[in-house]
Amino acid sequence: MTAETAAAHSHTPYHSPGPAPVPPRTVLEDAGELLRALAAPVRIAIVLQLRESPRCVHELVDALGVTQPLVSQHLRILKSAGVVHGERSGREVLYELVDDHLAHIVVDAVAHAEEG
Image (cartoon, rainbow, N blue to C red; front, side, top):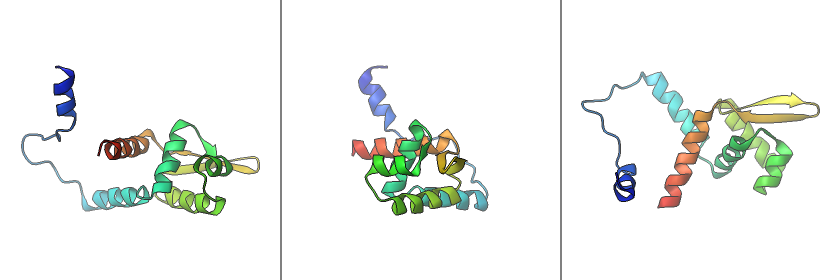
């Protein structure tokens, strides 16, 4: 496959033969909640930062150039959606992603936006 055909195929949606099974409604609702939790630019930036390594709030504030209350608010939303979890380390809480699947969703969305 040439680079041109590989590039052309990379934008072709995947279609399987026949209808795809529809997950149970509760799974679809949970997926919707997850996507809503990831839908804010600051939360996307937080996920991208945590993809690199666990971070505490002040590190995220410095990296993103936003206020501490704003970072904390977005971390609460991500935590309640099961995207991140925090672990106390002395006086600080170290936040990290629950799993790499979430980072892939965000990285793919950012890459898609950069293409457009």
